[in-house]
Image (cartoon, rainbow, N blue to C red; front, side, top):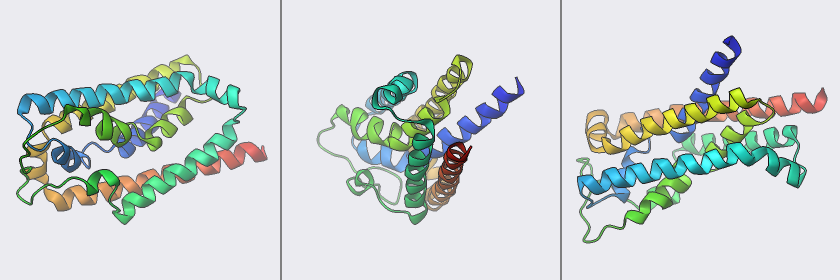
Length: 213
């Protein structure tokens, strides 16, 4: 029971840091510019549910993907760790993604209105790659690898919880942005980047230990 609790804390910290609900607030505001309150809620729901389904699929069939391509657990841990470290490093450097460079949020926290609004943004770029990006998929698959069904069930429940928090953050994005401000959101993003980079390094070390064992 203790092992499940410690494992759950590790999974939560990892997924929360990578998905980073608060840091995604200004991005969501940008891509939903000009949308009504109802449309924003619909987009947030579609994005989080789609992201959950995508990551869930990789968690459940990840083992069979490994077997089909002959991928070993140590190789996955080392490669996945390098990828997570890169994601965290980019967050620390405050580099704009292609998503962020295509949207804009005015300084007063109110998105500029657009004549038309396309709800397909819920799928891309919100669900993919903002929420269910490579980092999220790699982290979830890494935790699911070489674990029994109880651990996998815990991963799925934690994933649902984190995406539930993300949904709440998105539908209240305008209030969160006004309350915290751009600078605090930037600081939180950098802290999450540091955590993700450390998690990536830890995965690399675990992979090397497995090879050496």
